[in-house]
Amino acid sequence: MIFLNAFLLSGAFCLVAQIILDNTKMTPGHITSIFTVLGALLSFLGIYPKLIEWGGAGATAQISNFGNMLYLGALEGYKEMGVLGLVSGLLSKSSAAIASAVIIAFVLSFIFKPKN
Amino acid sequence: MNKEEYQKLVDEFTPKEKKLKNAIVAFVVGGLVGFLGQVFVTILQNSFGVEVTESYVWLCITIIFIASLFTALGFFDNWVSKCKAGLFLPTTGFAHSVTSSALDYRRDGLITGLGSNFFKLAGSVLLYGMISGFFFAVLGVIIYG
Image 1 (cartoon, rainbow over the protein chains, first blue to last red):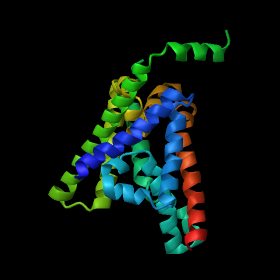
Image 2: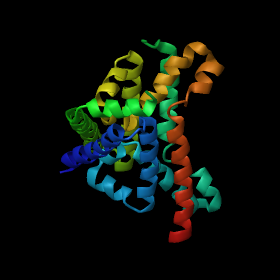
Image 3: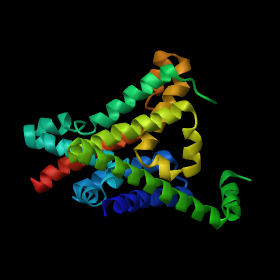
Image 4: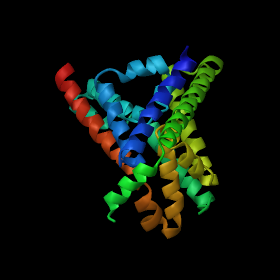
């Protein structure tokens, strides 16, 4: 049941992050950075693709998927064009996320004024 | 009273129930993000014939668009401070941090305001993501060949 898995996996990620937030002095900035690195590590260990297979969007909607995509992008780049591909492929998969966030935030900052 | 003593005092008086409530809210809200995301990609795959990997890219862009728009409209800050990890850990948090720094620093000018502060909050995710992704990939090439 992929919908339930997505709920449980995504919820579990956020639950762990919340427990860290409440019991340490780390800020959300620390935690999101750690989870991104964790995503790259889990991808390196071959676990993250399995998480995506099991939990679908529950794994891909997380910031840790960013680390996963960066790792996989660099690795795929290496397979295609060798050492150069490590750098040219690094951002290939995550480009959609970065570029869309940049474009959307830029355009919105011209349309809206901050509320506070 | 110094900062640490104060923090200790605060911790003593912070009820355990609040932490439990935070944890439950984060789990349910975070879970809902994953669930709704799964509904979205399933619709794309089944009704529009989008490939699985492509549907995840569409999901990512859609989440970023929604979170950025809600941030710009002004009520997402409130949601994030209530749901905490439930909303800052998914990609919504990344979009929220980029859009809120863009909105906040826009009035300080295009270069010194918007340009230099654009990645103020999201920069560390980009930096450490890229560094770890690169070095794990180098390690992967060495180990797995």
